[in-house]
Length: 285
Image 1 (cartoon, rainbow, N blue to C red):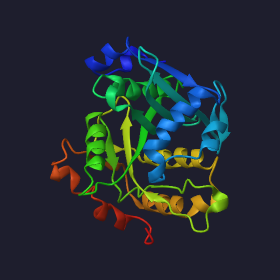
Image 2 (image 1 turned 180 degrees about the horizontal axis):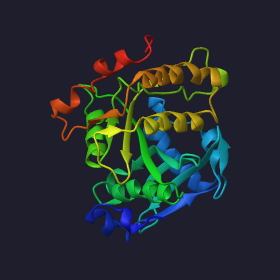
Image 3 (image 1 turned 90 degrees about the vertical axis):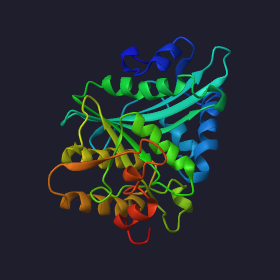
Image 4 (image 1 turned 60 degrees about the horizontal axis):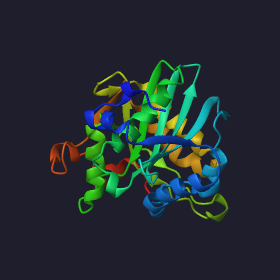
């Protein structure tokens, strides 16, 4: 499940022998436990797909062709030595064979409070790297979505710091004003409400302050291909077109902004505050 070479710290390597990671491939008790944990953490923020959507993606080997891309979904459950659910992670590998690009969409991750700071988070960060490399694509881009920084919400700042320590950077919102679409049941949506988020990336094998334009475009194209499997096209079109228009107007490689080293790192946070990010998005947002 995890190549030990993809675990990037000693605490994580020590955790390899303590935790067992399993891929959930069918609806049952394991699915209910893993989905339930993610639901508790993310559903209230509108950041989790509906249960039936994720259940429909489950399969050990199923590969879908979506917009000319290869799509696989991975739901992982981590068990402690006594068998309790210690963590859950889901991600998507989306491959463009014509360009040899794999975008690993890091959807959600949860670690039980009693298992935090035990190395399990490192394992859950490593698993998508192993999955991405396993696609055989020459270029692997880890792609996450993060809330813009909010001054009175320390949890958003802590998450940004954690991703920064993992080698991630933010695609400047001026070039890629990214929105996650409305994840509610399409039949119940009168007016879609996309979520303005930061596009957070890490390019495997590279540590650069710029992202090639083709990879910035792949971020959007690959993620929206996943969304097209459960969202209506009319709910995707406007935020996608806005982001593509901004990206098309950007000349050359796209700047990557550093994430904060601490919650007091004002220099890094200054372009990431919500009130700074939102003007790049659709006016109604």
